[in-house]
Image (cartoon, rainbow, N blue to C red; front, side, top):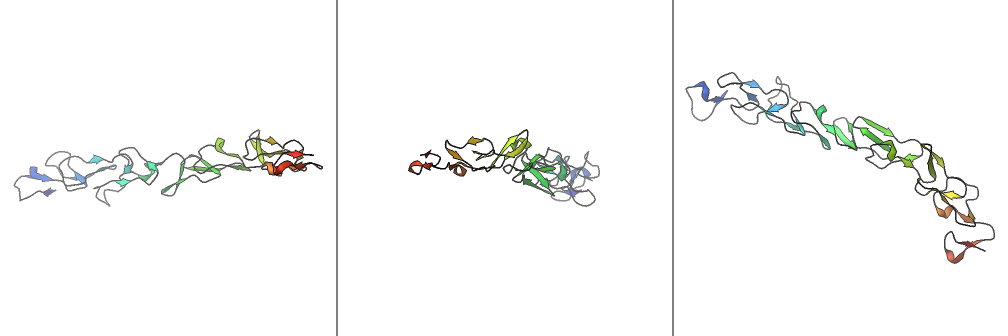
Amino acid sequence: MAQLGQARNSVSTCVCRRGYEANQPGLACVACPDSSFQASAASVLCTLCAANTFQPYSVSVHDADTCVQCPRNSTSNSGSSTEAACICDSTFHRNGSKCQLCRPDYYCPDQDTQTQCPIFMTAPAGSIAEEECICVPGYLKVNNACQMCAVNTYCPEGVVQSACPRNSTTNGQLGRENRSACACDSGFYEADGVEGNCTL
């Protein structure tokens, strides 16, 4: 215990130093329990760590005089005692002690799982479900799998398959990404340079 001010003649005037508490006045001070702290000399019980912080230190190693902030992009309940209690925010996954945004072309349903989208699919960074994976341009989802767009069609965003304009074709090629892949049929030309406007 530490005394405040001048010397005192009663143990009741003693207070515990920071990181310690006394259950009752006059009793020996003990280190703060896990998940709590005592920031200054006091005669009150230790305080639970606030939400989004934790107290990881063993009483035999470190005085519990402060709580540690959870890693960036993670949260914890009040009274947490380990960094593992800090859960990464949605769209993030845990990489060691860091929470990182889920990578492009992957989805992260929880902090411990980062799964690559199925073949020929893509997804923006921060995706959390396989449903956010869409087919790459030139492909269309059929029965939960991506297939190349049919001859004489194009799929610019991997979602909708559009037919080539009248009197144009993809020349037998599959998986076209945009309308520019549709060439005018033999004997036709693009009138006034307008793409897809094939006339005699």
